[in-house]
Every structure is written in C-alpha cells, then in structure tokens.
Length: 465
Image (tube, rainbow, N blue to C red; front, side, top):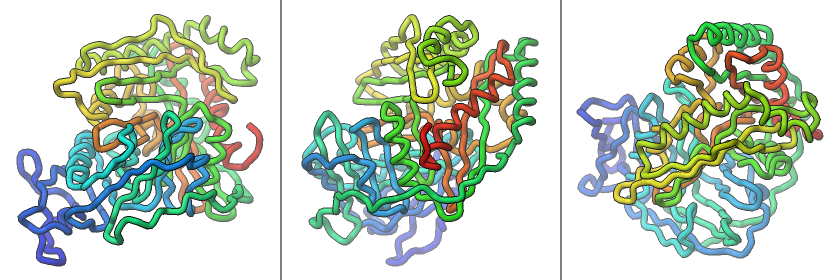
C-alpha cells in the first residue's frame, strides 16, 4: 500500500498534482531503486502493480527473420496481448508491469506513469520503428467510473511492420540472452457446450430504450446516441482467448484484432494512430448487413441513405472538431467511402492531421482529448452520454473504449473496442452497438446489433459466419 515501508527500507514516492494522498498504489521501479534515485511518480489516484525491476532495467530489440503468423506465437493461454492487422502488428506475453487507473483523468494518468516507467529503462533498439523498443498494450474503459482501464507491459513482444520483423525483451532480473521460443502454439480448439443468455438488459427492454431515445431525438433533445447491447455466453470449460483471437484474425484480416487483459475482439475502426507528428483516424458510422440487403446493393444503399449519412456526418465532424485544436492542419474527405466486411458494410472516412512539431502531444494525451467521439457516444456529447447512462442500464466496461498499444516515443495505435468479448473462465460477455438518430427504427436497430454479434459468436463457436 502507498506509504508502507517496503523491503530494503524504500518508501514508494507519489506526488499528486496540487498535493493529496493517492488511494492505493505500488510502483515496482520505486521499490527497486535506492531512495535517492527513486523517480517522482505522477500517478494520480491509480493502482499500480509491477514485478519489481532492477534500477537499470534493460530492454533489447533486435531484428529477426520472418516470425510467421503473429497470432500463432503465444506460448500459452495466460494473458495474450495482441494488436494485429493482416500480417503486421504486435503480439506480447509475460508481464513486466501493469497499471490500473480510473476516472476522467485516466488517459493523463496512464501517460504520466508510462513516461516515468519508460524513462527508467535502458533501451537497445536495433530496429527503430514504431512499436520497437519498450511497448505497453492499453485498454481503457468507455466511461470514467469503471475500474478496468489498464496498461500492460509485456516481457516479450514480437512485431512486424513493412516486412521487418523484430523481437523485444525486457530484463526483469533474470538477464537477457536466452531467445524466447517463437513457435506455433499448440493446437487450440473451440470450447464445447456454448450456450447463450440475456445480458444486462434483455432484448425487449433494450428495444424500448432505443424507442425512447428516438422519441426524444424527434423532440429535439439531441441528434445521436450510440447504444450498446450485450449477450452472455457460457461454455463447459474455460475459454481460450487464443482461439477466439486466431479465429477473428483469420475471418476479419482487414480489421485490427486485439487482446488485452481478457478483452478479445476485431475492430474495423481506428480511433487514432500517431507516428511522430502525423495522426490518422478511420471513422465508421452507418451500417448495412447481410440478410438486410444483397452484398452488391449494400454500399449504394448506404450512400443513398439520409439516415446513415447523417449518423456518419456526426461522427466525422466530432473527430475533426476534437483534433483541430491540437493540430496545425486536419484533412477529412468530402464524401464517405464504403467499407465491406464479411458480415456488415459501413460508411467510412479516413482523417489525417499534423501535430505542432514543437510540442506534439503523445498518443495517450490525444486520446484523452478525443474520447468519446460521436461514433461511440453521440451528439452533442454530454446529452448523449447522459441519455446512455439513463437508458442503457449497464456498465459497458471497456467496450467501445480505446484499445491498442503505445511505445516510449509516444507513438502507437488505438482502435475502438468493438466486435468483442470479455472472457472470464468459462463465460464471455459479448458486445455490439448501434447509432441511433431521429429516423431510426427500433426493430432495425435490434437486427443490426444481432448482425454485429454474429462476428464474435461464430468465431467463438468455430462455425462459418
């Protein structure tokens, strides 16, 4: 606990902005360092647990030959970490450090902790690409009051970008030199006996919540709100996150497949990518699905739909408005394009921006400024969030929150945690969401949520989409 004497007579150091006492915190770097060398941690109201590192912990990144399919490399089912799209991305395992935080300042807290942690490391990076060197995998809650926001620093990371492969190892006291085995994992199979039950809000009550939202929008209370729906799955034995992750990566190769602290999914929506001063975002809003329209009709129907284009416009304008004060320029397309996935079709807009090179904010700071956008919250933001809290009747946890990775340069990629499941032993909580505007039909929105849930359900069961 903060303030307790630790082995070696070292007392963890915590300075809160403006003074005050943290609720509970432990810092492995502080515990391992001499008092005179201990950093002044800016961890505000978070909980930190780490494996104690030496005062001069070492990180080494070296190039490797093609590591093969990244999602096949996990040595066991314990806490796989992943951010992979097609053949590129990062996977990690083992745990060198962990941060848990909550509240409206959780992104700033995570950024401060990560900066302190990364600055203490001795890094040897032979690759020098985004994602090499020290890396943390991140998954944040949608709202500020949930306790599940987490940064995890793996002991081993394997990455590939632009045809270059590498491996990063953190020395946690046992020394570097032994190369971790990069081999295909033992075969994993889908769990048996999967059965489904109602989530926090049964379907009919959820439909009623959507109908009430539509009524208020037609009265002019707000323009858009995004409602989440959950579904519970239970199997005969513990669910292996590697299986679900591998299936999603195979079925949705153009999505970003992710796994952080039991949250496993495949998102088509990139919240933010920061590479130096360049920022990119892919905004999705407006959806058709197979069975609703023929595949060759869905794109044209979306582009012709006033309801879907309105929903998309709110989401895109929200991102542009949030980025503009932080950037010297922001570029957004005049018209959306169509993104086709195996089970749904979306309206899509790719936004690019340039940060001020004199003091570019880190990825985590940028994320704190833009989340939640209208794509997962609504428009205007505060009335939409208030309506969600009133009518949704559940804690979303990390669903629709930012998920991905950040490196010690402040670069990284964070998507929105969509098409996902939170795994816990033999149970999984599946999530999907829909954007609701004044022209929405509650029955159509129910069908859309069910269509989106198919992605995870079919992957979990190992059956065709």
